[in-house]
Image (tube, rainbow, N blue to C red; front, side):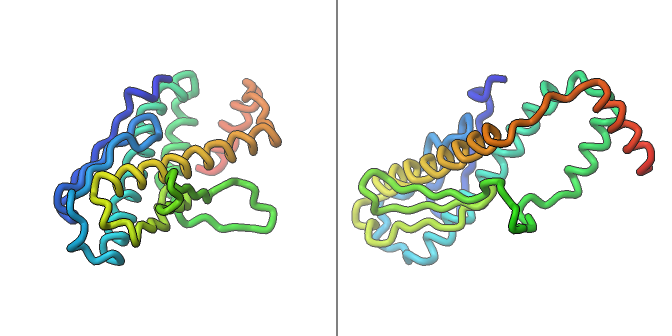
Amino acid sequence: MNLSKVITDLESTEIQGFFARMCARRLEVLHLPRDLSHQDPDAFQKTLRTLLSRLLARHSADLMANMHDELLKDEPKEITDFLEAQLAKCNPDAVVHREDWRFPDRADGRDQTRLVHVALRNKTVETVEVAGCFDRGGRWVGNAIMQALNQALERRESDVKHLFERYPVAPVTPADREELLERIRALR
């Protein structure tokens, strides 16, 4: 699957001149106003968290829509319909954590100067810390946030990869599909 063709843009009037673009699970562009000196740091960071969370959620949805046909093309329609219905009912941000929970849902990153910090949980940007950097201008702050967010995304992907290496998943067999179909029919 070619992830580079999945591009998600977000423009907003909540921050004048805000534009962001994600491509292949990475933030490629983050345009902020040049002069940030008139911004209230707390309100600005809160708005950034909201906008970046919205962008991550949209990009995830775009990736899933792109992968959907490719991943499920050989599956029986009854299975794909059931899976789609179950996924539609899910709220990925309402995860119940148990003591044996192993799936990495949190990650954080910093820019090269270590002045900017971004923390993720699932598809939500929980933290954007840029206070004290507003005098450097919007271009610098945008690049620093982009570095920190991309580092957090890379760390989470690495954690997920290591999880699947530790707990490998067996390939689905025709017998597995038949058993799944029987269970789906029993649930209906």
